Image (cartoon, rainbow, N blue to C red; front, side, top):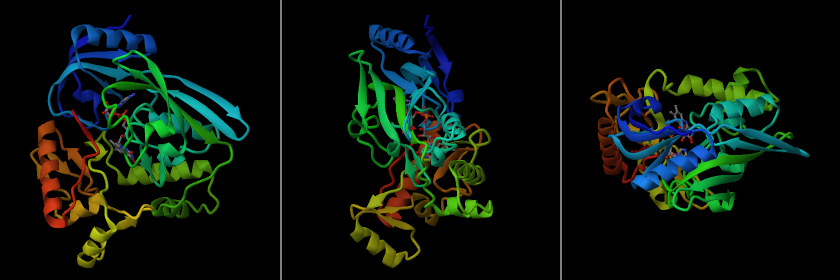
Length: 338
Ligand SMILES: Cc1cc2nc3c(=O)[nH]c(=O)nc-3n(C[C@H](O)[C@H](O)[C@H](O)COP(=O)(O)OP(=O)(O)OC[C@H]3O[C@@H](n4cnc5c(N)ncnc54)[C@H](O)[C@@H]3O)c2cc1C
């Protein structure tokens, strides 16, 4: 039977590690638990929020209502010719899922190795890294609707995936819990090696004809070297999304800042590196109380120890103002602020 806990410490459930308590919380391991938890919240008129690995949430104060902590584990695969369909329970750890598929010789998830968090949160912001987004291997998911109690299937089109966004981050935010996700992998690898970091790592490993496992190893190695480990210093990865601006604005900026990294998109817009903009404004390594900007990755805000969420948020707002004043670009948060 499901246990509802009260006034629990949530900080230790997030990678930022900022302190906050949940008014009510329930660890959910299956659909029946979830139904009971939602019924409890409905009886008491409580708002519901879902927490996976807490690697993309900044806690800025105590959380009213019920926090569902997702521990729904499941793996079921079906091989169909060269395709492998794998259904994961949404509480499965993402990196463990990637490691397992690679060890089975299945290709598709290798570029997304070492991203923290759960499988269920991956469609929420359509996670991506090193030239691949989860949308490219996505088949379908199931989501439990808090209001109706129904479980509904969603195709990729219905999820409306975009750059770090989906319907679950917009219209359906805090209205559903994703309970399972099915990915289509392949026995016939189509490897993505377009990213310079991956190419350089493969070259350093003296690999000229990479296999799926080589890409996985290269990504793990690059990420371990370049990204701050949340077990050592609290953070939630990239705090802001890379802004997408018009071609006209990009060319005006490039006249003034010829070295500005920019990535023309197929729809004519241009993606700009948020980390570069922040660094140009002098924020790299800066501090605001116990929070700060990482000294090697300006896109990552960190908790140096004992930072409260409001300090981190204040720092983020100062950065947004200074980037807007300097470049006329609005930085949008990638991290979910609770
Ligand atoms: C060091 C580091 C590196 C990172 N690198 C990357 C990267 O390369 N690419 C990238 O895209 N992201 C990256 N991230 C961000 C983060 O890992 C991903 O967004 C991840 O998918 C979050 O998973 P989570 O389970 O921790 O979600 P949480 O932080 O627990 O939740 C994030 C949001 O999703 C919602 N949510 C969680 N689970 C569910 C569910 N089952 N159903 C409905 N809503 C849900 C929550 O309510 C919350 O709003 C990084 C983070 C860190 C700390």
